Amino acid sequence: MLMSNGNVETTNDKDSEHFDVLIVGAGISGVAAGVYLNKYCPSENFLILEAEESFGGTWWTHRSPGIRSDSDLHTFGYSFKPWVGPPIATANEILSYMGEVIKENRLEKNIRYKHRILRANWCNAEKQWFIEAECLENKELKHFRVNFLWMCQGYYRHNEGYTPNWDGISDFKGRIAHPENWPDDLDYKDKKVVVIGSGATAATVVPAMANSAKHVTMLQRTPTFFRTGRNAIEIAETLRELNIDEAWIHEITRRKIMHDQTTFTARCRSEPEKVRDELIGNIRDLLGPDYDVEKHFTPPYRPWRQRIAFVPDADLFKSIADGKASVVTSQIDKFVSKGIQLESGEILEADVIVTATGFNMNVMGDIDFAIDSAPLNFHDTVTYRGMMFTGVPNLAWVFGYFRGSWTIRSEIIAGFVCRLLNHMKKNGAKSVEPALRKTESDMALFDWMDDEDFNPNYLKRALPLLPRRGDSFEWRHTQDHWREQTEFPLINLDDEVFIYRGIDNSVMAAE
Image (cartoon, rainbow, N blue to C red; front, side, top):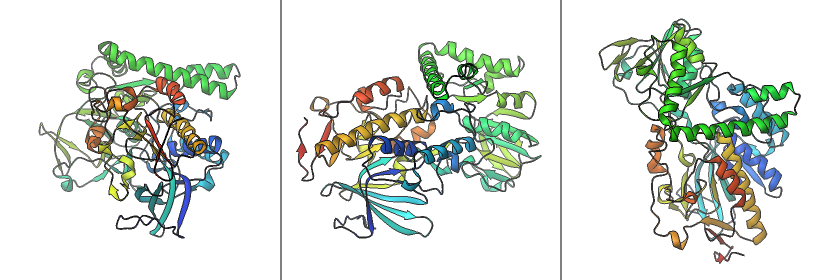
């Protein structure tokens, strides 16, 4: 087991439990992993550890006003479970859907809540991960021995949002709240509210609070691109009118949305100015010719270089047009007792300030990783298809798409992991890790994500913690779901990129 001093005790410990697979996290990805293991690897004994007191990840931890998805549920939902509600769903609707998936697939017995993993050490001698976790109910340490570790913990710290270190925060006399740490007792009825930020969270919080606040001001440093539309999918509505089976509706709608997303993303690269004009023109139509759209809704970057937020039924812009909300584009100088002082000297008065300023990435669950007790720095590794890492045995990582649904990639990876586990069992392999081929030994290496392609601040802050990428598609996170959903099922598991070892640590020859 893994001792508190970081050393490994390799003798069998009566207090440690053994599992074939340990899944970290009971959010969208972890639940998908459990369903796939049940279906495709029924002999694998697996456990899901979740730090929160319930399943759902983001949809359990986030309690801010109006919390909803910014991806449509036909693709954010699972391929095997039809989504029958509106495409943009509330947190409660998503949790209800996930609860049905857990119940229908009998996953309750596999999940343990309030267990936070502290350390994970791979022991080459025993070909196992030795896990130390804390039971948050009684602070008791729990130990597990697992053959394969499946990281489904998401990509940010659920209870610690990112907040810049502004001057004078302690001088403000009102309430400050971050959407990831929303206080249950916050009363904003008839209050002046300033929401700092302009991303999907701000676009959700502003119209939700505007319904009862005296006024809500969205204070942004840089404008964001938005898309608007009805909270409905026309093809799904048409198919329901024709009494088509919901499973068919779900699959057809899912493919249509994925196709449209891919087409739109390609246009953002091939004709960015035209897409920019379309997006900004839509906002101008909603707010009228006299509104300064150039200042407040014209970003300085091309579309999709940062995430584009979808605003269902244009509720944010309706709040602005109705005078319930307004937008200020400026830099913050400091906080003052009455609110926020801008660089211009103007003071935005506020009773409540909401810091919708993003999140901190949670790389590998903030777990202390080691291999044979030597600390593991993932930045020293190279990612294999954005899901495995050179030199790290028996570990898979789920990181979804930026421009598409997280769930799509979760399922693509789940299918691959199950195929890999069955392949290892069939051939008696005890460990597997990817390695650069001999012909790739001099391959150029780069940061995990191309700054010219996608560059949100939360990702740039985390690059020193993330693995590196190569110059070929196999050694990067491609963001191309059409390519990956076709290629992943065809990956040759006997390719020299996979290094298999037996219990004696010898390399097993490919068949």
